[in-house]
Length: 265
Image 1: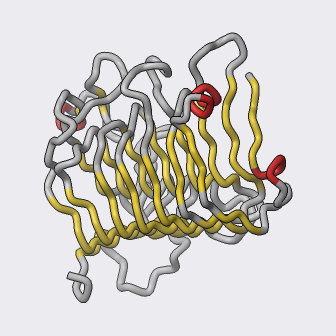
Image 2: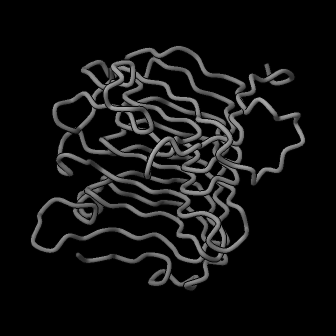
Image 3: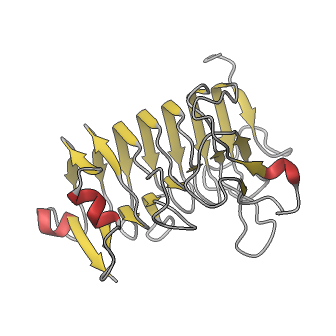
């Protein structure tokens, strides 16, 4: 309940740990059978050894139901179980739209706050705070919806990476279904060393009625020269939209050409 939430944290946490204490345990991983856009359509989840069969996710059922996650606090996670193999606060791999995820906070994670790998879940009332990498991250054709969400980064310069790191696909980048999630009513607060959002690897996606403040850099969209399918093409096709949003105190400048940039590779 709201008065007595489920708390995932490390054994020694007495409730007084600093919000910037990170990496004390792993994280919460939920896996389902919804579609991915990677080949062969089933993958081993990030952060778990690839020979662990319980770490497999993906399938053909976008309406798959992985249960209910409601009134949950996930604190001080993200331990590194191997080289460049840290665990997100909340990892959703191939989770379907039949799953209920509401009133969830991730605080002080060493990797991303939340990362979606494919699937199509709806998430409401989400907080990602003081995480050391990205606030929101998605990959492998994520197509869900998120509403009423907060990203709050450690204000120390370079203490976090991006408010949103948005990748379309991995193997191949142009696989279908495309990553086209929709975010509404997001408040995202960065620091002077971080970027607001990156769209790359053929990612689409939408942000509406949201606020972005205090980031060092704005929104970057990848344009791959010589290729006819990338995130810039998603923007041209109307699959990448940022509408009715407010950007304030962006270090690179608050003019549109400073907030929105296209990176050619």
